Amino acid sequence: DTEVTQTPKHLVMGMTNKKSLKCEQHMGHRAMYWYKQKAKKPPELMFVYSYEKLSINESVPSRFSPECPNSSLLNLHLHALQPEDSALYLCASSQVGGDGYTFGSGTRLTVV
Amino acid sequence: SQQGEEDPQALSIQEGENATMNCSYKTSINNLQWYRQNSGRGLVHLILIRSNEREKHSGRLRVTLDTSKKSSSLLITASRAADTASYFCATDAEAAGNKLTFGGGTRVLVKP
Image (cartoon, rainbow over all chains, first blue to last red; front, side):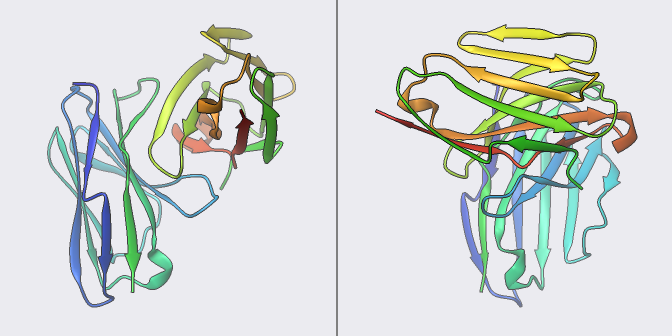
């Protein structure tokens, strides 16, 4: 299996909702990442997990809460989001210190 | 912050022509990677070039790296309509905490 699977593909949520984005890989990668991408912009790093521990938080607001329950799964819990948080959320994985990331297809999030 | 800047921002060519895009970056790098993104979905890793390499090939792709000028180029030869996508360079640099940082991207349109 050489894929990163993200669910759901699309999500519409209200500003008072709580939702979660899920990411799964079975390539044995021990580094996993969340990126946020606005339209016609490059992906921006949010969080990095290395060996299931949070190693980088790019000063992301606390309404985004990452979780890495095991080496194959990465979640992003969302609460009290703002309309400006609407974006494509991309998950990626790689070997720790390795080269080349494998990206999922992303979750298109709309906050209303 | 963006490490890489890409040029041009957009490129329109006829099928069969070559497409060249450039990436400039600011700090010393461990490696530079190129990714393709179709229609705002996931990114696909195309090729990685290390700081001690000057040129790499993969199929119809040719990447060069000039560390003295802090720049890289991606050449797609004999383009096809299916090459229509956004192309991003991304740098892995110690100064950036070994995080993968993306440039602004080049939108390529290949007309049949």
